[in-house]
Image (tube, rainbow, N blue to C red; front, side, top):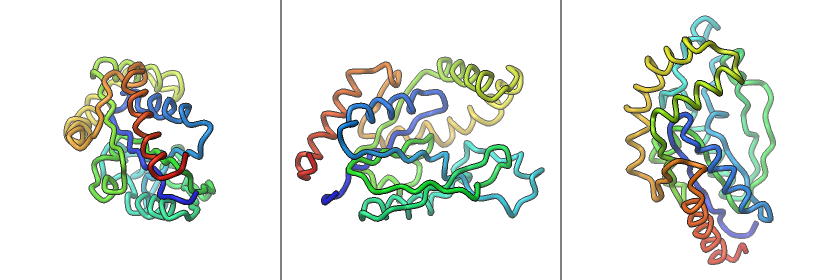
Length: 211
């Protein structure tokens, strides 16, 4: 990797389809050097807090994320330096002792609900994307995911959505849409928008003599 990598931020509410969009972009560049950095891996370390208190963590609030570490790691990757990506232990509600070695790549995708909320993080991005999906679709997707993958009850998912997820989305996630260069309605189903974006990325890579 000889040139500055292309950095893409993909934001959007829970269940919006941003992970599907991210994977679709990734698939377009499987022949190139590309990596995905998930914001979820950068929740703050809470090992100094009793487990009982950790259970009350609001994971949809900007203060839940260690953006300082994320920005430090992204800056190192942009400068061609490897990092050790943290792993978050959701059972213990704190950062794991394990890390994932990550080498710099030509295309870096940062994906998460609030990746466009921090100006210092936005300033490192070449392309900022917001995946915009109707709230009823998002809650259905969240219900299915949390019941199937996390063994939660319908009642607990709905209670969390009403008391935490929805108000945090309206207060912090939705307003970041104004920072986006590209808004993709309906997420991964919008193949035209994904094709247009990947064409733009290839154009940037070509100008930087990466392709």
